[in-house]
Image (cartoon, rainbow, N blue to C red; front, side, top):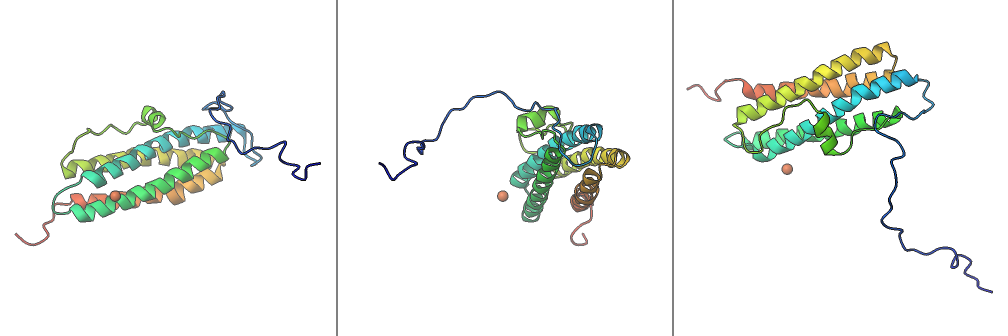
Length: 193
Ligand SMILES: [Fe+2]
């Protein structure tokens, strides 16, 4: 009699090339016990997914401009734009995980985000630096506008978790980033001419 009781039943070969149908469609809601109505959770997810899609695009724009920025403020802007990208990436994860917490499905594939976003597409080439910065500010305001609407709605539907995330993390981060970018568009010379 063999002493290796597992040998008959297990091997270490990964089972590859699985195929299967979706087990939760995008837009469908699971029921999680968080004492929040189906309607409230569905409404919050419908508000959060466009914000998530726009945020994914804004993150990509920050990285694009981090790479492509030029001129005598290159190094300063190169670092600042990367910092903002990292902060947006944190927000993206928080928003996506909030959507999951609500029982919904977060936008994941960047091509899905691209279909959903209302942030205008940047040219594939290199814009002048003030145009890059203006583009970022306009993207921020599109998102901030959606966030403010979602803050109002989630207060009414008592989705306090989403409301807190949007106010404490998303809105304040965006407003701060707008300030830091906008200061670079003030036409003040470094020294008196
Ligand atoms: Fe970099």
